[in-house]
Length: 588
Image (cartoon, rainbow, N blue to C red):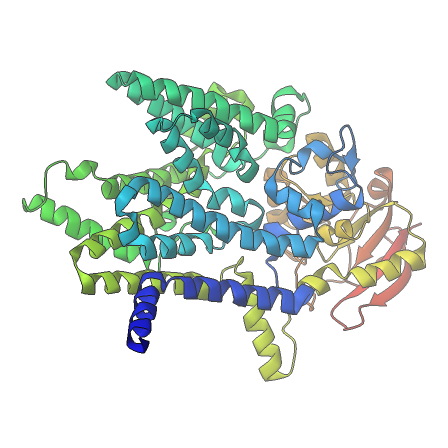
C-alpha cells in the first residue's frame, strides 16, 4: 500500500510539477511586497512619476466617476485625459490604497497572462492539451511575469484572451454563441485602445477581407459582427478618450510633437535592436533564452524543409507565421521613424496626428512566447528525454525573466536593495515607494505653511510627489494636454531653456514633462536620496510663474538666488529617516 501511494505521488508530481514554481513565486512576491510594504522599491519612470500619482489624485479629489471637472495638475487638466474608470485596473485603485492596488495589479497581470495562455492553448490543442499541460502553464507563466509597463500590464497579459474569444467566435461553437460576443464586448475592461485595441480592430479588418477573398462567408460574417462588438466595447469603456479624440477642438501638444527622422541605416539598426531586445515598455526578456531557442528552431525547421525532410507547406506553418509576424512588427517600429511614411499616415487620417502606429511592437512579447511554446511542443512530441529538455528550457526562460533587473522588475529591485542594506549596513541611494512620496513629510509641511489648495511647483524632484500629496501643481507629466498651456508654461522656464539647448529641444519637440528645468544640468530630477545638481540657482521667470497662479515652490535644493526669482524661504523640512530634505518657498 505504501509503495502504491508513493507511486501515485510520483505520478502526480510528474504531471503537475509546474504548480510548485508558480505557487512558490506567487508566495515569494506576496512575502516581499506585503512584508516590505511601502518600503519596497517600485519603478519610477512612467509609473510612480505618472500613473500612480494620477490615480492618487483621482482618489484625493473623488474624481474617478466625475464629469466636467478638472484635476489639479498642469494648471488644471480635464478629468477626461486621465485613465477611464471603466477599467479593471482602475477599479483596483478605487477600492484599495494606492500601494496595495499597485501590488494587486502585478498579481492580476500574472494570473491574466497565465490563464489566458492556457485557455488559448487548450482551444488550439483540443484533446491533446493534457500531454502539453506543463509546457502550456510554464510558458503562460513566463509570459505573465514579464515586467511590462505596469499601468497597462493587464492589456499586455490579456492578448491571448482576445485571440481565444475570437477563435471561439470563428468556430461558431455552441448554442450560446451570444455569450462569446458578450465576453468580447467586455474584453476592453482589461485592454487599452491606444496600445492594443486599435491594432486588434485593424487586424480584424484584414482577416475579414482575406476571408471574403476566399469566400468564407460564414466566418467573415461572424468576424464582421465581432469587429463592431469589440469596437463598441472600446468606445464604452474608454468613452472619455474617444470624446477627447473626436469631439474636442482643443489643440494639444500632440500637434507639435517632433518625432525622430532616421536614415535607412539607422532604421535598419533600430529594427534589429527591437527584434533582439524589444522595448522597455514591453520588455519580454526574450533575448536571453526565447530568441536563441526560436532562432535555432527556425534554422533547423526550415533547413529540414529545404532538404526535403519536411512536408510541403512548411512556410505557412504556425511557427514560421509567428516569426514573420514578429519581424513585421519590428519593421513597422523602424519605419515609424521614416518621416515621409509617417507624414503620409497623418495626412490620410488627421485625427491620428501624433499617434504612434509603431506600437504593433507591443504584440511581440506574446508572439515570442507563443513561438517558444511551439518549440516546446515539438520537443514533447520527439520523446521522453526531449520532453524534460523542453521543461528545462522553459524553466530557464522563467528564471531569465525573474532575474533580469530591468526598470519594472520591482521584485528583483526590492530584494536586491533590501539585501544590500542588510549585508552592508547602509541604505541604497534609491528611494523606496514610501520615501519617494514622503507623505508624512508633506503633511507636516502643508500644516506648517497653511497650504490650502494653492498652485505650486516642484524643483529637483518629480511633480508627481506633490500631486500624490494633494498639492495642486502648475507642472506635471502628461502626454495629452493643451498646446496653449505648454506655451504659457514655457514662459516660466524660458531662462533655463535658453541656457541648455538639449533641454530646449526636449521641451519644445515633446513637452509631455512640463517641469522646472535646470539652467546648467540636463536633469536634476531623480528618485534618489542624493540630489545631483552642479548649480544651486533656479532659472525661472517669477512673474510668469505668478501669472499662472503659482504661489508656492517646493525644492530639494536650497536656492541661492531665491530673492532674484521672487521667492522667500518658508522653511526647511527633512524626513524622519533623512532620505529627503525639502525647502518650501512662497512667491513674494
